[in-house]
Structures are given as structure tokens and as C-alpha cells.
Image 1 (cartoon, rainbow, N blue to C red):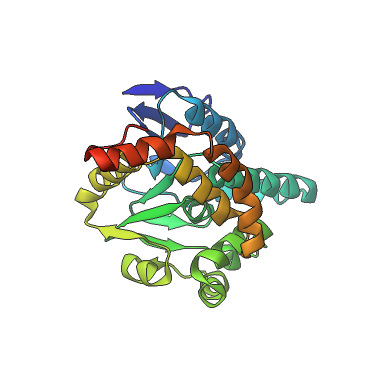
Image 2: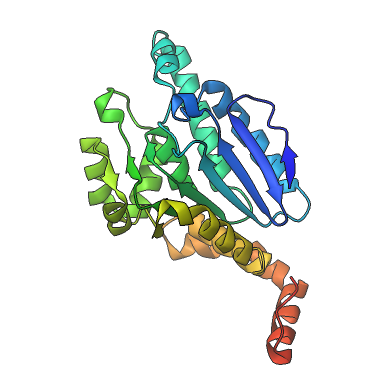
Length: 261
């Protein structure tokens, strides 16, 4: 396993074969995300994406908690100055966008509480694997904070407008069963089994065609309409005409062996 220097306290990253893992690592503060962490996230994600052989990313938290969200003590200082508050939210959204744009599949591995900005990061991942004892929620209504447009629309695309309103209006935390019902959780497992299952799944994704997965991500992130997806897929389709992935995939199927993408 290779450790990757994140350059900032509170973020820890490793690469194990084809699977990169990014850990929110402030367990003494329930992994609350500082401004320095928000700022560092895009660069850390770029380094992990460029690491040789990486094909999937796991995002999780240390100490049995995913994240309590933004560091509220820091946020209260930020809101003393409207200009600082605007810059803070721009950095927050930039980190989320960098996670959503990661070129390989991303899975949030959610133990314990996943709240506010932490849930924002989990929603920006492609998938969410959740422990039975996890609780998820988005809590700006309890603080008077206006949730930015990017995470609001991303949440609505994931769970639908009515459930997005439920989560945003109430600020209530939902348990793993309800999170799965809402579409916030893709798989739910006992806490003791969750990490192994998530790593197994990520390793499986790493054996799939990067071309197919990259094209699917581009289409699904592009927008709600068919024309949005068509425009996003066009460069991938042109590239696929010369890519070895299809030839290898078809040959492996006919030869009854695993493909080597």
C-alpha cells in the first residue's frame, strides 16, 4: 500500500493496487471538514487520479464516523464577513465538483454520522455504501445557511425533488434503511463488513472497461436530457472507434477469459 501526501492535516490518502482511498481524518472532531481541507481536496483528487493504475476511489472517514460536515466553529468565524462566507462556499462547491468529476468510479463508505457538508461529499460520489448504524442528513436549515445551488440540484437528481425537500426542509437525519429507500444508499451492510465489501466492489470496478465507465459517468453527469447525454458521449464514441477496449472485451468473451483492459 502506498501513502499519498495530501499536504494538509485532516486528509489521508493511500493507493492499494487499483483502488485509491481518501480518508477524512479528524476523528477528534468527528471528521468535520476545515476550509484547508476543502481547498486541498481538488489537488488531492488530481494526484490520486494520476496515480499509476488507479481505477476506483473510496471516500470514507476515520474513527467510525464519515463526517459531521463543515467545522462549525470555523464557519461561525467565516460568517462574520460576508465576503469570506461567499469565498468559503465557492471553495466548498469546487471540492464537491472535483469529486464528482473524478475520472474513475467513486464510492462513499459511510459509517456513523454523515451530515451537512459530509453528506454533500457523499452525494457527489457515484455510489454510497452505508453501514446499518449510519445516519445521514443535510442540516443547513438548522443553521440558517443557504445550501448552494450545485449540491441542491445534485441531491434532487439523486433522490428526487420531494425527498430533497424533506431532507433540506427538516434537516433531520435518516437511518440507513430510510437512506436506502430514498436512494441515498446503494448498499447497506453491517458495520464490521462494510469496508471489506466496499473494497471488494471497488476492485471489481477496476476490472471493467475504463472507456465504458468514463463514458457512462460523462453522460449521467451531463444533464437531465437526452441531448445533454448525446453531447457528452460524442467524444467518447469517436474515441471508442480506435480504442482497444471493445476488441479486447469481445475477444475475452469469445475466448471465455477475463478481459484485460
